[in-house]
Length: 315
Length: 315
Image 1 (tube, each protein chain N blue to C red):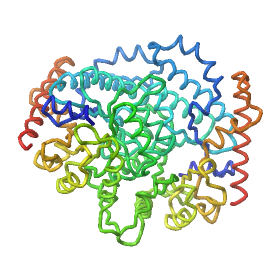
Image 2 (cartoon, chains in turn orange, green; image 1 turned 120 degrees about the vertical axis):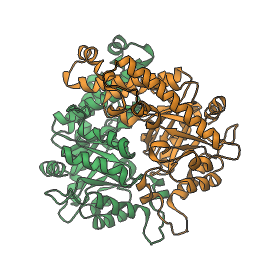
Image 3 (tube, rainbow over the protein chains, first blue to last red; image 1 turned 45 degrees about the horizontal axis):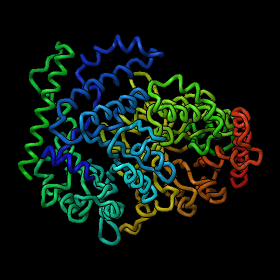
Image 4 (cartoon, chains in turn brown, purple; image 1 turned 120 degrees about the horizontal axis):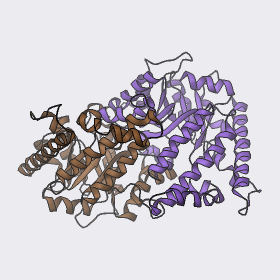
C-alpha cells in the first residue's frame, strides 16, 4: 500500500476518481462521432453499437484522466461497465488502465472478484500478468470475502510478488448491504466485524513502511459510525471508501475513517466527477464532440478539486 | 430454470462439465502447434504467449465440447482462467460459449460477479446483451451474495427478461468457506442458512413449469449433510453442485441435494473430465497435437459417461 500512500501524500489528496462510464454519462455527440470509424472496423455489423460505445468510453476516460492527473493520486475503473460490452469493452478497460498508468496514476481495478484455489489464482493474474506479459496494468484489485481465506491467499501472494495491493469488501455502501453484513452473531459481534478481523489478519505479514498492509478494506461512506469503529479495529488496514457524493456520503461522514495523521483511507467519487458536465448549465446537445469533451474536462477537474478541498477541510 | 431442467431430462444426466483450462490441463503440443500462427497475428510480440495459450484453450475447449455434447446437458466455463490472459482470453471465453451453444449445450458462466445498483445492472448485461447484441452468449451466471438484494435484483430482472438464470453462492465447496458461511448467528442459524433464505426469496416470483425458480444456489458437494438440509429448506431453488471428483465429492455425497424425483440439482466436474487425458497411460509427450486432442476427446467422453452413470446409479 506504500505506493498508494506516497501518491496520496504527493497530491495531498486522499481521493480516487471512479471511471464507471455508462451510455448516459458520455455526451451523446462523442458516441455519435465514432459511428463511421467503427462501422468500417467491425467484422460483424451487429457488434458495431457495442464497439462504438466502448470506443466512446475510451475517449471519455482519456479526457477524465487528463483532467484529474496531478490532482488525484488514483483512478478506479469499474470493470462491470466495460464487461457489459463484451471483449471490445474489456479491451477498452485495459487501454484505460494503461493510459491512466502512463499519466502516473495508481490504478485500482474495481472487479470484486472472488473464487477459490486455482480459480482465485487465475483471477490474481490481474495483478501479476502471465509469462512476463501484463495485459491488465492495474495496481490493485477489489475482492469479495464470501469464500474465506482460500479465496484471498492467491491475491495476497500475487500482491506481494508484484508490489501491488488488494481491497476486500467489508462494509459496502448500498442499503441492502446490511442483510448479510449486519447480521448479529452468537458472540455479540456482526458479520462484517468478523470479516474485518479476517482482513486485518490476511494483511498481517505485508505491512509496509507507512504502517498499512497490502490488504485493504472497502468501507462505505454511508456508514460513518461503523467506519470509525473499523478504523480502530483494523489498525493496519487501509480503507477504500465508496459512496461519497451521489450515494450520499459527505466529507464529515468519512472523517472517522482516517487515522490521527489524516492517512489510512482513500475516498472514491464516480458520478460526482465524471458526470459533473451534466449538471453544468453550459452543456448543449448541439455542441460538437470536441466542445462537449472540453466541458467534461473542465467540470471533472473542478469537481475533483472541490472534492479534494472538501476532504482537506475536514482532515 | 426450465430450459436447463429440460436439457437434463433429455440427456438423463444431471451433470455439467467445467471448462476451466489452465496451461497444465492443455497438452503442450497443442499450445506449441499454434506458435507460428500467433506470432504472425499479434501486434505486440510481448502478448504472443498469452494469445497462444488463449488460442490453445479454444482448440482444447472445442474438443471437449464435441466430446461431451449429447452426453451432458451443460458446460460451465470458468471465466477466471480466460481473464487471466487479458482481452485475448476474454475473446476466447465468448467464442467458447458461442461454440457450446451451437452444439446445443446450456452455458453456465461461472463468473461469481457481485456489485450494486447500476454496476450490478452492467454485469447483468452478461445475460441480456446490449442494444440487441449479445457478446457473451451464456444461459446463466453465478453471483456472489455478500452485497445483499441490491446486488441480486438486476440479475433477476435480466434473467426474466432474457429467459435465463442465475446461481447465487450459498455454501461453497472449499475448506475455508466455513470462516464466514458457517458463523453462528444470534438466532441459532448459520450465515449460509440466512443466505439460503434470501436466495429462496429472490426466486419466489420466477418459479417455472418444473417448480424451480430462475435463482439457483451454489452448494458444494463437499458438504453432503448441509446440502441435504438445504434441499428441504429451499424447495424452489435449483442447485449447482461443485466439488465433485477432484475436490473429493462423490455421487453418494450429492444424493441428498436432489429432490424426491431425482431433479433439483446439477453436479459439476472440471478436472475429472477435462484433465482425464493426463491420467491415461496412452499419453506420450512426443504425440502430435492432433493425436493428443484425439486422446483428450476420448478420455473426456469416457469420464463424462462414467460420471453420468455414477450419478444415475444413486438417483
